[in-house]
Every structure is written in C-alpha cells, then in structure tokens.
Image 1 (tube, rainbow, N blue to C red):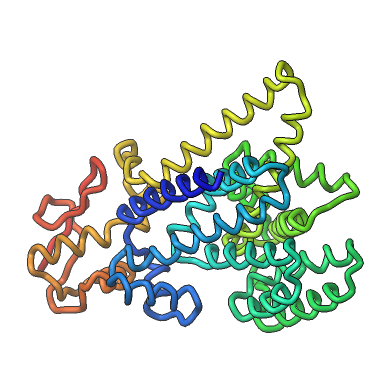
Image 2 (cartoon, rainbow, N blue to C red):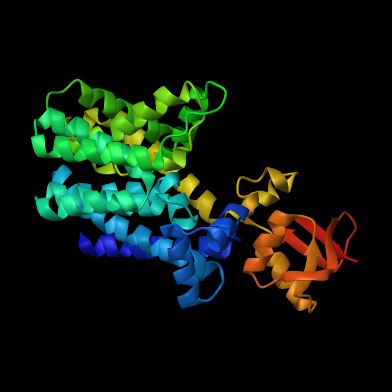
Length: 385
C-alpha cells in the first residue's frame, strides 16, 4: 500500500506543480511576501532564495509541506481505520478536497496549521507524550489559530478526565486569546448560510453532508475519538459565531479537513457491514462523491480553462491570481522594467516579477495593443504613455 501512496503523492505533486505554473502572486500574497514577518512570509522568502524569485520558489515550500502533511495523515489514519487500504483512501480523500488543494497552492496559514495539527495528533495517538506537550506549547508561537485546537483538547481532556491535559490546554488557550485575541468588532450581522456555503465548497457538497452526518452520529455515541472533538468543536464554533459576524474561515477549516480518517472509518464500516447486494446506496454515494471531488480538483489545477466559458474574465474565481506574471513577462519582452502605474495593488504584484517604479505610465486599454495578457478567449490590453 505504501507504493500506491507514493504514486498518488507523486501524481499530486506533479499536478500541483502545474497548478503553480497557472498562477500569479496575488495582492495579499505580495503584501505577505514583502511586508509580513510571520512564519509563512519567512518560508515564502526562503523558497525564493533557494529557487529564485518566481512562482515556483514562492509556492513550492508549501506544496512540499502539503506532501508531508499527507504522509502524517496516513500515519494518523492507521490508528483510526481498520486496514491500510482505508488509511490510503483517507489520504486520497484529503488530497482531493478543494480546501486541501487551495491550502497547498496559496500562501496562507492553512498549510502550516494543517501540518502542525497532524504532527500533534500523530504524537498524541502514538503515545509520544513528552514530544506532544512540547509541540503543543511551541505552536503557540506559530499562529493564533491554534487557540481552537487548545479548546478542542480542553473538551477532550474533560471527556477523558485527563487533569494534566485539562490544565495545559486551558492555560495555552487563555494565553493564545490574550496574545492574539479574537475579533468580535463590527456591526452584528448573520453569515450562517455563507459559512455553510464555504464549508460545502471546501469539502465539496456531498462530502460536507457526510461530514455533518458523521459529526452528529458520533455525538450520540459513548466513544468519541480526539479527531471528532477537533472537527466538531471547530465546526460548531464557526456556526455559532457566524450568526453574529463574518469569520475568516481559512483560519478554522484546516482543523476540519484533517478529519478524513474519521469519515472513511465510518463509511467503510457501514459499507462492509452490509451484504454486497445491499451496498447500492453506498456505491452510488461513493461514485458521485468521487466525480464531484475530481471535478473540483481538476477545476482548481486547470483553472484557466474556465476563461473559455466566461463572458467576463473578472468573474473567474481565481482572477486575483492571474495577469501579473504574464503582464510582467510581456513588459520585459518590450524592454520595459521600470513603469508607473496607478493601480497600487498591481504595482506591488509586478514588483515581485522584477518590474519596478519608473516614469513611463502603464494603464489598461480597450484598444488592441502590443502589451496584453491572454486569459483563455479573452485579451486584456495595456498601453504605455
């Protein structure tokens, strides 16, 4: 089974490399790269130091982190599932989840949070208690999003009556909240349906429904694993607070996408408990889910293909991650490396590709010109004056 796992990881790695080639640095990513001092910014800058200041140097470290997370997930899944095949399927499901693909390709905290969460879970499940507590404390300095992980461990510790874990998780949660805080400002407004929609997009619709079903089913059981406490606590926390305000769900979704061993465990248990002639509903669900997942996966990797279907290229879901690299290349072909541009966001993105501030002004144009960017069947033109 390990050979199949390595084959899938290699295929996923190659697909993600192609996905990188279709993306440009976004404005938010450019801000992180040039001005931020967080761990993700340091990783991104380290990547460009090794591989050059380009998209591969920028994103490759996070793709590698994603591959390591897949290996950790397989190790964790061996503790939750009955067979190594089930553990393998857990990894495949994790790889295909839209939220997982996005975390591997984009520059944000998700890939780091997923990696450290899985490492903490592996240490705990394999009884490496000393290393577990050391890492549990260290991630406090990595990102404030781990506050929800501390809260989950607190609930789990109460359930297991583990006094040491109760005290440790409660103290760490209190420190995380005091240092990083939680933004509850702004006018109260409901975003409950928006939150459900984002969860559905992160998991794909059918997998999200099954995720909700598994969370509810385990709630009614006496035996509740740690992975359930993490996923359920995060999900309920998001639903409750989304009634009042909009949440940055990329801060919380990493704690839910790691639950794939739990989903596969209950799916395969239900599937195997039935006679072959009574497995039709399960087979249909698995096949439909796989179709959805493959569609989302390929849609993200080959995202530029959607430009051929759209009348307005700005409606593309990844529009903010396009144009800059191609525009910079076109400018360099015309020996233009110093320009002035009124769009400060685009200017910062172009700076990453070696286009610095100058006297010649670049502006968008509706008329055909030599400086343009192709987006499928569309062309975005620019002029110099």
